[in-house]
Image (cartoon, rainbow, N blue to C red; front, side, top):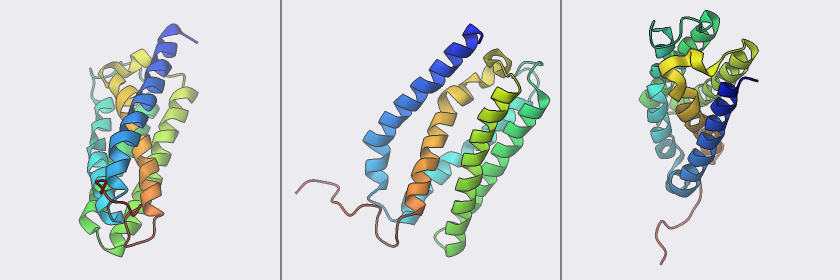
Amino acid sequence: MPQQMIWFFVSIAFSFIAWGIVTARYIWPELRLRSRVEALRPLLVLHSFRFIGLAVLVPGVVSPDLPPTFAHFVAYGDIIAAILALFSLLLLPSAAGVATAWIFNLWGAAELLNVFYRGNQSGLLAGQLGATFFLPTLIVPLLLITHGLGFRILLQHQPAPAMQESRHPA
């Protein structure tokens, strides 16, 4: 394995650790006190920015050596996820909004995992990502973690918050 790939995977691992700490310490304690719909909203807003994945289709942003098939999977998978996130936001708090949030969360998580798989399968080198190097090393770990939160929230019974607990000690 080329040394650049070792640093690439180390960066991804550190990002998972850092975002895991942020999520456990700051994000989940806030979201767990909200109703399902109100807990889903910030996650969906975050994922509405997945249009950024289209950057892999812009010449000069990525290396000309980036496999085109890989770039298309990233770009089109992410734009579909962004559209589904926005559509979910529009439809919440209706049952259709919750159903669309399920579809978004299933699609979005599977798409991110598929991109990791396809990148590995195609022999992708970190340098081929060019300026989009920050996406898998900074953004994708956050997106995967928030998909996990999304599944946790979607599985909660309604209308109670994810966890009945006072925000402030008595």
